[in-house]
Image (cartoon, rainbow, N blue to C red; front, side, top):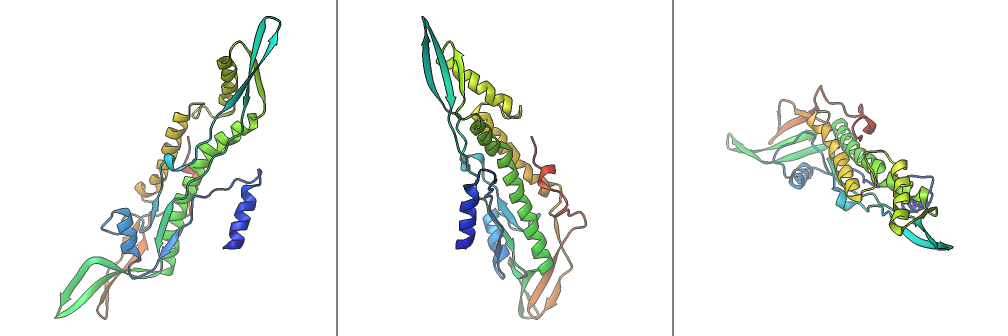
Length: 256
């Protein structure tokens, strides 16, 4: 872990490397792993995907700031005003993300008496299905990372490209600021503009697009017919025929 942290710190200091910190899926072991995932997600059943990614809103990210310093020069009776763009930073958010590890996961509230014996119901997660669920949740994290890259990170980079430049001369300080702002607008996609409130709205909209994977059934699971093993009633979990895990990259899901 220490070595990983050193590599991350080194990458963060390299201006040629984009460091995305959306998180990583965390395994929840049986027998109560799926129960814990359902509790965190506020669900009572297996849900669409069996995993959970709690994508945060834009407020959890560090937004870049567009700041200028002002100066002026006298030229005879005229005063020329200038604006200089200052460097800025932004930061990705880390999202909670969970998937069930392989094994038999207790189904909450599903216990029954058969012939005087108590039977507990379990979801059975195979190694293959656990890996698929993990991959599906990683796709959500990748979507979240792309949403940040297309918004706050892109804006940060655009501002820093302008940093140190002097805009002017202009007749007033506000007019000099508008020249700098116009340069920023020209360097960004039209969907972003220079209004920080709009940056927040666009990031939230792009973050919400990851839900398409679940609403379209690309992460859908099904439950196969149960089997009785001792005092366990096991329900094997499998991917549905329409599942598209690993087949739809983030650049086809998250866009302006």
